[in-house]
Length: 370
Ligand SMILES: [Zn+2]
Image 1 (cartoon, rainbow, N blue to C red):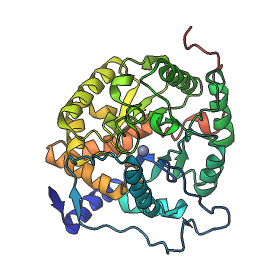
Image 2: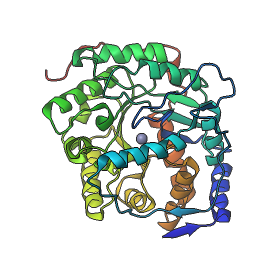
Image 3: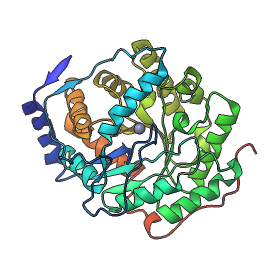
Image 4: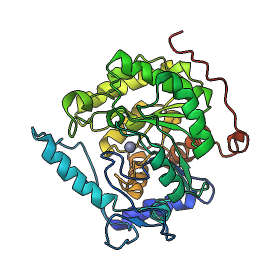
């Protein structure tokens, strides 16, 4: 276990701040509200302060502290998924107790981040449109917040491309996020893989990056569903059918704490990235030891900074990246700039692209299965 005292934390963060005078830093993986259970009802609409709260507990701005660089955790194994779900939900009610533009700006300020990609996720039941309206209303500052869309299960495969086009027009979405476990797309089945290809094709036609949750979630989901998004399910996908970038979130390692599994995942990823030049990984939601492995195994130009805020503290993820790069004796400032600035701006945040002003798509002719 490595403990960083607050003085060292501030040292790393001030190095990041210094670099931010000459570079714009990005976080490609942030959730604008609690997406895992999607049960919290936020009273948005009236408040102008930029803070929306689930309870009457006052909001206090995030602060730095000492921190532990987390290693490989022993996953909680329990036969009682229901009670683990309840405990997790209570914790998330606290973590996601306050949302809104000010809350996220405060985190970004602390972490030296200029702009984030917000990722709503369609739940397995019903539409996502109401959530998109909330997200656009709470995070209206396009200079700080870009928003991704998500395709609900109510949309038929052959309607996906037009749906994505409409989301672009109505909500100015900048990417599509697919979370197979939350939305309920079994990538271990032909039907699930087929749907993924339709979404991927729609991203290509709409010039949007595609962000895929990848990893294990059998802690709070029954076994089969928890494994919907494992890397072995997606290793043979024809990623090249999309001209758009594909970001494998969590470097495929979400909750994969076992070293052997990590090595397997990373060798599959290594293979995938060498086969498809539109494939990238984000480093959100993974611990220090996993991050170290990713940095040594995956080409640095394929890695994007992501935090998984607010599930994770954004400033801790920035410090962890700086520490890991130093620890590996990589040229830390140069690599930090590539992972958090150059790569995200090249792959996702194409600030000067015409997409903001001129709405551009190609035909939604379906090429999948033809
Ligand atoms: Zn996430």
